[in-house]
Length: 244
Image 1 (cartoon, rainbow, N blue to C red):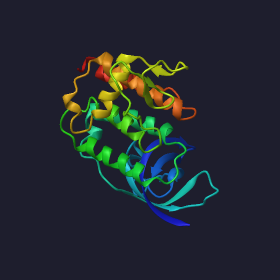
Image 2 (image 1 turned 180 degrees about the vertical axis):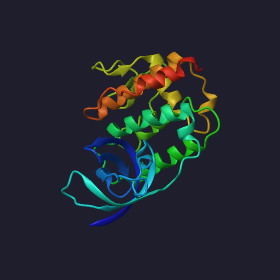
Image 3 (image 1 turned 135 degrees about the horizontal axis):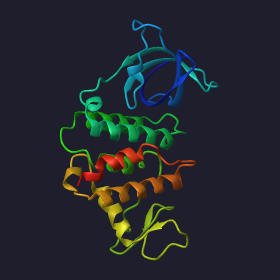
Image 4 (image 1 turned 45 degrees about the vertical axis):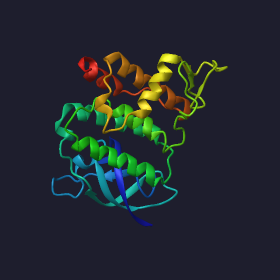
């Protein structure tokens, strides 16, 4: 079945001499893997730059429901980058979020609100001229709303514990080890108040930002099966090692 869809590249790997396997999040088909035959000359329609992490594309897919690898009929760049590939900070954030999304959305079916959230967030990152040091924190926390385990902040009281399994606050210590102490729990509330427009107002130290990332990733590992350690996290931590 011939299907047209928008897509966001998450990961690509070379397969043989002239092929690539590319994992994408699509608006019409959810998560898909594609087998792409790369041309032997620069004149071909497919180009390697199409498959850089978080690149947004318009696809025409020869979709087969029972196939694990779909084939592309046509590919076009949907939104050329303005700054992202040329800004070391933004590029490091993009590489981290692409790897994060590769696992966080692994089993997603069609989810238009999720796709629109990711797409608009990438566009905002690309066009933003100020600091993006907290962007990944806001992105990850708010993504949880679209995949089913957004934290419930209604029961928060000073000194409460955040139950990572249930995504809610408790005034008593949970009967399992997956919870945050009072200080880290309060930080969850701070994270949930951040938006892309206001995040520059929240000044975090290196240690605070790293702790926030570790907490969010722990939360995802409890709710997303087989969520691994992220290889790109070290680069991001090194980048923000001197940022406040």
